[in-house]
Image: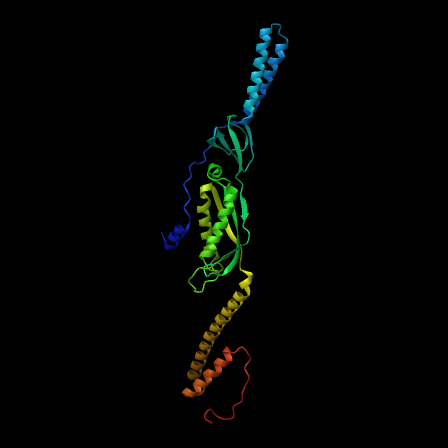
Length: 311
C-alpha cells in the first residue's frame, strides 16, 4: 500500500459495523393473491345471501357467521398487497423484526400482519450551502460541494440511522469542512497539495471520506464535486494582489531565462563568424545593453555613440 493510500485510510472516520444487512423478503405475485382475495369476498357474500334462503335459524346463523368470517379473512389477506414502483423498495417488519426487503416492482403480496415502509432507491443530488471555513494556512475561504448518492442497503438506511437523508446531509458538510481545513487554498511550495491546484486529488479524497462516513447508513456515493471555491470577501482583494505579484515574478523569471539564452547565442554567433573582436569590457557592455533591451518592459530608445567606450 502506498503512502498516499495509507494517509487516506488513516484520515477517514471509523463508523460502527452495521447490525443488520438487507436480504430479500418472502413474497409472491400480487395478481394471484388479488384473485384469491376477490374470490374470498365473493364466497363470503354468497354465503350470506344463501343464509337468507334457509329456513332453519341454526343453519342461517352458521351461514351468516361463516360468510362474515370468510369475507373478513379475504379482506385481511388482501391487506398484504403492495404496489412497488421502479426505483422503490419496501422494508418489511413483523412485530418489530426485520423480515426482508421487496425490490421487485409490480404488485407483490406478503404476510398481511407485517408493516411495510417505502424507501426510494433512485439516484439523488445533495448540494451543500456555501460554507465559510479556514484552510490549512488559516485563510478564510468559501466552498460548496454537490454529492450524487443513492440508497444501496435499505435495511441499514432504515435501522442504523434515524433519518438517512439528514444523515447524508450532515456527513457531507462535515467531510467538506474537514477537507477544507486539511489543505490550503493555494500551496506555497510546488510539491504541496492545494484545493485550487489539485482539484482531482482533493475530490478523490472527499469521495473516500464521504464513503466511509455514510457507509453505515447503507448509502452509496456515486460522485462528489466542489461547486464553489473562493477566498472570503474580506481577504479576496489581498489574495488577488498576491496572485498577481506571483504571476509577475514568474513571468519575469521566464523573460530573464530567455534573455540570457539569447545573449549567449548572440555572443557565440559573433565569435564564430568573427564579425568583430570583443574584449571583456566590450562584451560586458554588449551583455548589459542586450539584457536591458530584452528584459525591459518598454521599447528600447536608440543612442548614437560617436566616441568609444574608452573616452
